[in-house]
Amino acid sequence: MHVYDTDNPRLPFLRDKTSKLTLRPGCYIMKNAQGKIIYIGKAKSLRKRVTSYFRKSADHLPKVARMVSHVNDYDFIVTDSEFEALVLECSLIKQYKPKYNILLKDDKGYSYIRISDEDYPRLSGELQKYDDGAQYIGPYTSSFAVRQAVEEANKVFMLPTCHRKFPQDFCRERPCLNFHIKQCMGVCQGKISREEYAKIIEEALEYIRGGSSLSVDKLTSQMQAAAEELNFELAARLRDRIRAIEKASESQKIIDENVKDCDLLAIVANSENACASVIKYRGGRLYDKADFFLEQTDEPTAMLTGFLMQYYSSSDDIPRNIFLADGIDGQDMENITRFLKEKSGHAIHIAVPQKGNMLRLTTLAKSNASEYLSIRMGRTGREAAALDELAKALGMEKVPKTIECYDISNLASSDMVAGMVVFENGRPLKKHYRRFVIKGVEGQNDYASMQEVLKRRFENYFEQEDESFSVMPDLIFLDGGKGHVNTVTPVVREMGVECPIYGLVKDNKHRTRAVATSGGEISLSKSRAAFNLVTAIQDEVHRYSVAFMTKRHKKTTFASRLTEVKGVGTKKAARLMNEFKTIEKLRAAGTEEIRKTAGVSEETAQQLMEIIKEL
Image (cartoon, rainbow, N blue to C red):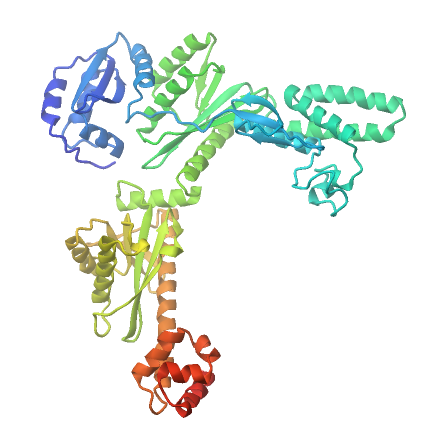
């Protein structure tokens, strides 16, 4: 937790007003200068809770600090109990949708099961209903349930999922892998009639509509009838289909077939955003899931409490059992349980499992929320964790999205160059890598060279001539210790750039050891994910700058060999290198091209070609 300056000139007025507030429970309604409601909260003691926002040197989360900085005034409503305050808060948030409250934004929409308009129809899940002649079943509110049902039906009934057209593509190619692993009936072989296929499609749709038990009962009757008629081939196919349904049904039972109808909720947050995940189990199997991107982060228990109230106040499907990955305040738990009991008309049990299957299920919900948050933020779970750890270790308010790292490379005192690598969301962004040739520094001077590179980089930023320099980084690393940081920081600050700058220190085995500040070092030994990320960044910038230095040194050495030919000086050698760019292109050039480009005689051109071929 860090102390953030709210920078609000209205704080003296707000503090004076709050000193006169009642100690009774109620809701407070924060407003900005335009009178718009920006935050609504509840309190068991209005004066104590509201005072916490406006006291001096308050330890606020970034979101709370931003909210307080915009508060011009507030209203309040006194209630008779905490329970009434909780219910009122939920109602007001739904009505006004304040900017700084956690608002539910899920990705759910209506979904359909599509049966394509073909001689041999295919089943697919769709988010929209198109006017394409196909048959649509739905709408369903759960895209997850639709996707699961279609995938399961395609697998159980061995329906084709390839892109071949039937009957046009009958026998044109060999059956695909799905046929050989018994996940496709092999329509492409041309041995299944349209009538037989249509019957299978209807059975698949009945399976989707009625579930596995009804399908098994019906198919069992058909199998017995086929056996009585001595149609053993059909009976065998029906037997295999029954087994496939039973297997699919079993695979969808989550851990324990006796799991009661329940919801599992978890919230995962980083310093910028949060995600809530709700996983629903009905009839002993995974029934649905919903993910909500919350956009604003708050204190963990406050987020979970607010989410529970908002989610279930808008839902008619409230199970008797709700399991949470993390706990909430005991009084809030009691009040929420009471609220949901009154709304649903049945008993409600809310718990935080500590062991067994339900703990495994809440862990699943938390993993799901973490993955969803990572996808929405453009990062994998591992990358998100690394950036989060790095931000905390460096005391940064926000997770750095764009990180730049610089390294100076040279061979003795010649060919001084620098490399700039860029990492976005924890991944290399190679199209924005840039190389620098040191121009204004004589001899080997890493500090002065680093100053020149950073100055040129931000001059480019203000001139906006290169896309790679058009983004202000969130964090800068220099390959070096505190000396580099102390030398470069004043130059950058004079240009009006406030981006945090740190050094990357290596041990005597050239491995990353710590992050250097202007006055010391920050160890990352306890932040393994952050340490691995910083090591990857340092290794990448070193590789990139050394590769550039090596390439440039080879080019310089080659140019010096060209000057060994009588009549060829540094200017003519440079003219050749600038025209042909690489040694390979020079070798491929003819004597006449060399002669014209360098402006030399035919004899001299022949001598140049001999040297070029030797190298």
